[in-house]
Structures are given as structure tokens and as C-alpha cells.
Length: 87
Image: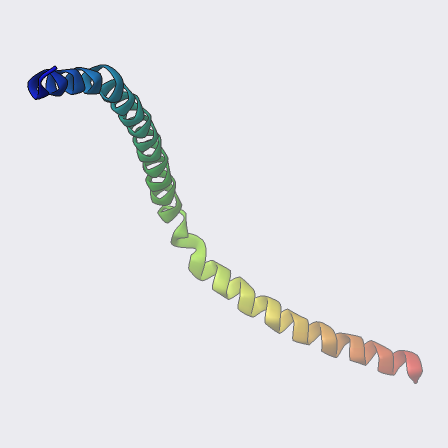
């Protein structure tokens, strides 16, 4: 066999064996990339829907301040009750 014949046999083996394996691997990669793209789209959709609900955030800060104030008042009230009971 000449070197040219071996070269053609190598090319045929490459086409018959390696190329289908490469195509199968690339198809699997493409499937995962599409899945990742769908997940990214879903994350963006959720983030956009979440930004529409951030209008109540200042009310949350007000609620936090009122809870702190109420906590202090409850402590004062409890102390007053203890004084009355112990008196």
C-alpha cells in the first residue's frame, strides 16, 4: 500500500468513526445550551415580575420601625404591670 492509499483509508475512518461521535457530542452540547437558555429566560421573567412588586418596600421599612417602637412600648407596659402586681 502506498502512503496515499493509507491517507484515504485514514480519511474514511475519520468520516465513518470520528465524525458521528463528534456530531453526537455536539448535539448533546446544543441540547444543554438550549436548556440553559430556557432557564435563563425563566429567571429573567421572574426577575421582571419581581420588580413590579417592589413598590411596597418603603412600607416594609415603616413596619419595621413600628415594630421596634411597639417592642419598646410593650416592655414599658410589662414593667408597669409588674410594679402594680408587686405593689
